[in-house]
Amino acid sequence: MPQLNDYDLTLGLEERVISLKARIREMKIKIGEIDPDGRKEPKLNFHRSPPPEKSDIMDIKAKLLGRKSGQV
Image (cartoon, one colour):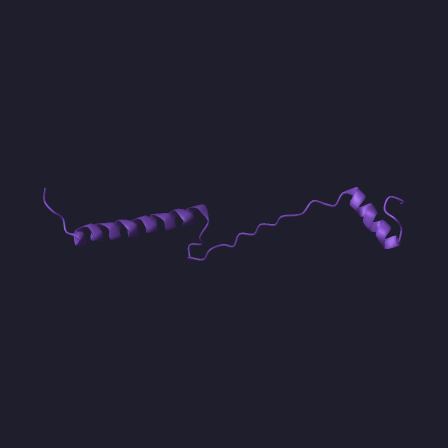
């Protein structure tokens, strides 16, 4: 079996990596993750907290009015 030197293997590997990176970039442009100019679009995630329960509102109201909770 002929012996390959390391340079031949790394040269082919570098070309394959460059090709793979180019294909990944093209796919990201197609799905809209990257702008064709190379700019990434920001992704915003807004998570709203659930509204307080009615009893919480009544407790706060009672505290603000100086009453004991539960006597509204």
